[in-house]
Image (cartoon, rainbow, N blue to C red; front, side, top):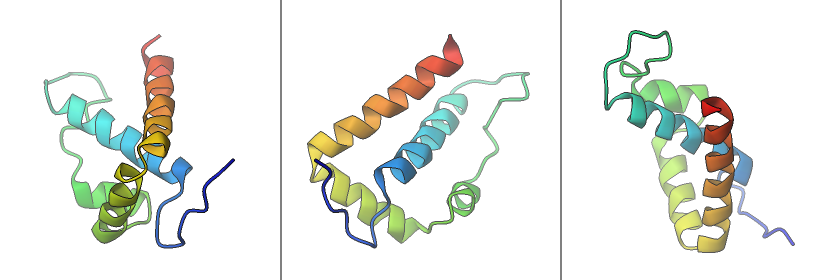
Amino acid sequence: NEVNIPDDIMSKDEMIEFLFDVNLINSSRGFISKSNNNYFMVRDTMLFRKHSIDCLTFVLSNDYYTKNPKLYLKIYDRISEQIKKIIT
């Protein structure tokens, strides 16, 4: 029972991938690590480029999903699953 998402809005999968990276980067910025997985130096512009979007696309998408909390919760459930996979 998928909702029709407007064309100018990121798909659920795109939001999951983008927000996963955002969460990974933001959590990494909280501490200094000597591992190769420290994302402290990643700039937001690099993140937008990686996902082939611009800031406005994300803002519009984020606004759309926050107005649809059931969809947004599904997105964060999937992000949580991805995080669990990398820490176990």
